[in-house]
Image (cartoon, rainbow, N blue to C red; front, side, top):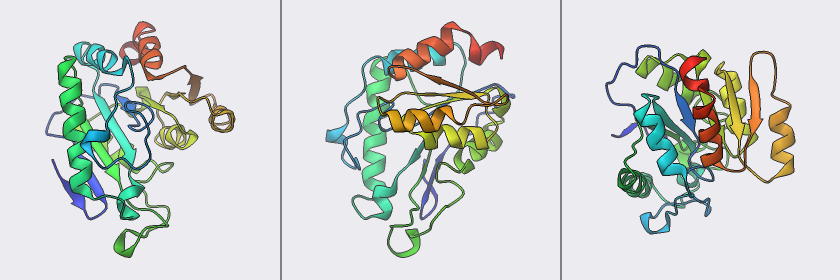
Length: 212
């Protein structure tokens, strides 16, 4: 577990997934409540139903990968130690439900950051596909059969740019919903769901990640 460079976090282990499709998840607002620049473990609140749904993916052999923008680091609201503490708390909460993550990638770079973290449009920052592509290479995933679940149109835009099969948006925000729906094409399916637990249940029950 660690940081590839000052602005990137890449924890993908050494597993070779043999071209299996993966489930990509945004973190804040999808897995955990978005409290705004979370950098303290005590602030973590799991969204209901997500941990058991991830556990179902684990049981089915579907790799689960978190891809998260973390501009709070660039803005000096917290640092990588704070990010690590939240990830440890998240892993503990998932383990209590018999679930785990197979990889976590994060990008701290942002145009409003300070010092060397002040970079606009870094390839890893969503809506760019860098985190997804890096996971695909490092884990030997079949991205063309993979799926992303996020609460922002930028999450799905990153999935479309990485040539994933599709994405599910979980947000009540109509503006984000309209932006996400405009990403739909013959090559990229766009769906919506009430929350991440519902999104994962639909993906699993439809066998979209096992028989695409």
